Amino acid sequence: MKRVLLIISIAMIALVGCKQEGFVPTRCSIEEGRRGQCTYKVFENRSIEIVPGDSLDDEVFVRVNVGDKRVFEFDFIGNQDDLIADDEYGESIWFEVPMDLESFEYKDEELKDIQLTFRPSCFCFIEIVSIEQGKVKGKKIGDNRWEIEIDITFTWSGITEERVFAAQFEQS
Image (cartoon, rainbow, N blue to C red):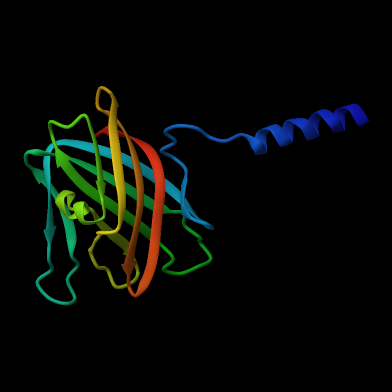
């Protein structure tokens, strides 16, 4: 019996201690306690357009149009808690780089050049945030695949937030 418990204990420690490597599109966490599903997409020959609403009640949103850049899009959709009303939350981050680049790195003021943009999706005031603090780094690692590192800080609804992650983005 002790042997069985020992084997089970070792197996549990090994499973819990394993670190997931690489591209895991179905699970992610944007901050402690907020888990959901992430997607990492690349669009070729596109550009980002920020579309303002017609009034204060209209949503502002980002549109990916035909263009001459490569657009990267990160989407997070939070897990649903059926016991909490209006807890749905999601967010997206977009940026664009010239099509001819095989690798890139943009920091702080340079982030304006790639239109690095954050947009929440929730039962809340929605605003588009242009990000000008941090770093975005990327390199092509295969056909239609990119390794991207994001380490950014921004203020949204009066709260300073941070997003730090590395992932493989794939052409959509």
